Length: 120
Image (cartoon, rainbow, N blue to C red; front, side, top):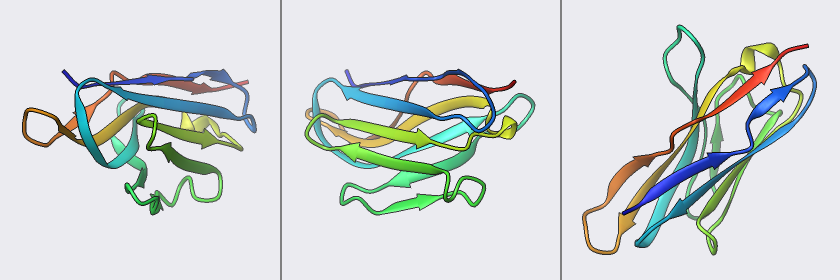
């Protein structure tokens, strides 16, 4: 069984930084693209950043220059370094990955989410 688990959320003041982590575990053959999405109260889930297996990245305009996505393929982990945080970054952040498990077809997996709150 494949699982994605996020960690690193919390409460931070405006202008502060947080680093989110996502760990993929289970019987994994390969991981293709990975990404972070977020959902604020009363709003739709939105894409924050993506990263391919080769390391190519893409960011939402709202986070460009402030957030950095990275991954460690050896350990099946992904990170989101968030700097210069703003109150509007407050949301539940979800990890997402396109994974090929060893014995079942490739599928899209999601973590349970981690809360990020930016407030003074």
